[in-house]
Length: 131
Image (cartoon, one colour):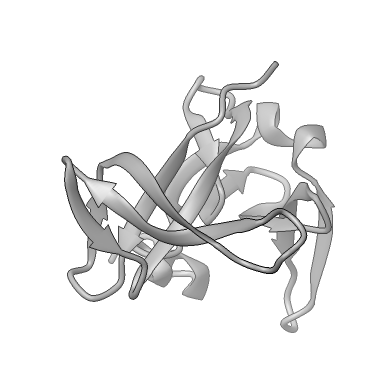
C-alpha cells in the first residue's frame, strides 16, 4: 500500500507549509465531507490561497519522492509536469509547437528526475533552467 502524504503551497506567502492536520466540514456531497482548511505547525490556516499536492507514491531515478505539480526531466522527453486527472497520476509531456501528451507517470518515473515544481520554478517550463 502506498504512503498517503500531502504538501501545501501558500500562493499568498509564496512558501511551503508543513501540514500537521486537516479540517473538514460536512457537505451534501456523496462522501459527506470536504476540505475546510489545513493546519500548519499546529495553527489553523484555512484553505484560501492554499494548493494541496498529493504524493504519488513513486520516486524518480534518484529516489526523490514525486508529488503533483513536480517538474520532471528526462534526457529524451525533455520537461514534463505531474498531474492528477481521472483518478490517476499522469505525466504531461510538452512538445514543440505547444502540444502536450498525457502518459501514465508510473511508466516513466524511474527514467526521470525531479528538477523543481510549477510553483517555485515556473521559469523551467519556459525553457530557462538557469533562472
